[in-house]
Amino acid sequence: MQGTTTADPAIAHHAALDARMVRAARGIRLLTLTSWPAGQERCFLDACAAGRLALPRIEYPRHDFGEVRTELEAIAAAADPDHPLGQYLRESARSWATAAQLLESLGTPAVTQHSVRLFGRPDEALPGDGPSAREAARHFISIADELDRELMAPAEHITVSATALQLQLQRELDNFFGERVIEVELDPELISKAAAGATRIRLRSNAAFSDYDRDQLLQHEAFVHSLTALNGREQPVLPSLGLSSPRSTETQEGLATFAEQITGSIDIGRMKRISLRIEAVDMALGGADFIEVFRYFLDAGQAAEESFASAQRVFRGVPVTGGAAFTKDTVYLRGLVSVHTFFRWALREQKLQLCRWLFAGKMTLADVQRFEPLFADGVLEPARWMPHWITRANGLAGMLAFSLFANRIRLDAIAGGSEPLQL
Image (cartoon, rainbow, N blue to C red; front, top):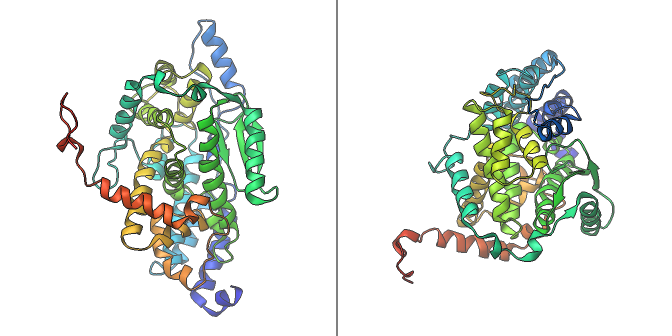
């Protein structure tokens, strides 16, 4: 691989730029730096229980990424816009620069503008000129609310503690790798229920988890987020593929949610939670404050602790008084639809290999298509680790082939009102 890099001046040039970008982006820790200080949840919930509900008061440290943004712009300017690696570097460097601007604006309404540039809005159309993410969210919320909970299996009501889940996940991961590669840890300050890096998965200490949660965490956090980070770190030409670049968030979350779907690990409750967050982002953008969004989650059936955590996700880095939002949660449904559509397209075009290359690092759907000749020539390495479902080509192709055909059947043409289904 080193020979390939040295022999091709264009590849060597962009490899050097990528190394500079990795160094420049090291301090742009978007989710970490937008997180609230510890102790906010307990103070808020104690006041709520005492009938003294008040908006949280969050103070953010000031950041100056001026030199970093200058370096990122220089990297983008030096990259060749006609080369696949150059296109990747230009888009990635400018995405990191936008994230840096967001962090420099913490606590102000300007965060919303930068967040929308990175993650989009709930009212944007889904791929294929479909409905908006918000309309899709309302669809899933409606279905979840209509379902009778008594239809759920008793086991689906049983929860396990974060400590018990930690032990279960650690055993599963050690068996998958054959050694200790990823450490599962408890984190009392985590906003989401779980978060994954290359070698560490964190679980929120006070969260309760179901059997579905366990499978979702394995497929979503471990076998997508962690594996793509591990594989990306092993790219000798493009090690930035091991970083959680803001511009790859939509594809990453879409791929991770698709993994839940394709393995049967997702349930309607999970779809409702994702959808509630999208609706909450839209509420905040429309003027709802933190308390209103917190109550929205409560009214939707979430416990107080979960409602606080869900509302906190929406108000990361922005004023809690309404009219602003951290819009990352809008990418989940858009990413899921995009990845699902991409996999079906890859099957039709006999390009399922592209789907496997998606696991070779944290990239977008556009990246993996641009990189096709680079993978074919050995410039980029294929994924070392992949989840079982993507390696079983026949099973994956079977499910996608059925999806391609079933989508041609219009449900409204075979069922109407109270009449029996005509099949």
